[in-house]
Image 1 (cartoon, rainbow, N blue to C red):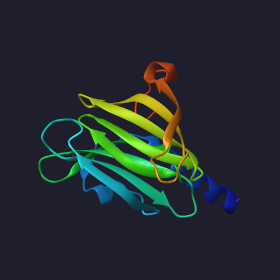
Image 2 (cartoon, one colour):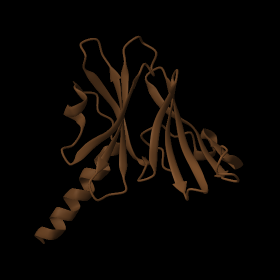
Image 3 (cartoon, rainbow, N blue to C red):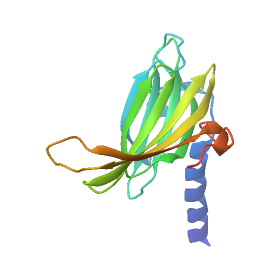
Length: 170
């Protein structure tokens, strides 16, 4: 019985990553103690003049890489806008930001043939919306040259039912 309760608690802790909170604090205040920060990108994604933060975390012994999005406020603190543990995995590579768009980049495959799996979101007012998913397949023909793009598949928000950052599932 005790083992079942521990398992239920662990599952509940992971599931709570996909909930939105609106408390103010420092980034570390919002990151559960069992997570380590793997990568952070500070950019003004909501275009209000205050730096925001996108944080990818690591769970020891897990392929899951929870992603947290914070909007900055004037006093150097942040508001947690949401989190999602279905975007980045053990193949996580980078957080790319262009204005109010951010992309979580994952790389899967071999050294010679691989895919870049990109999940792109856009910030509109105070909402974080899914924008598109790209699966770009590369092939190395000549090791002395850049890999060639072999194939690209793009799935747009409408095809996923227009999810938000919190509700998006790959």
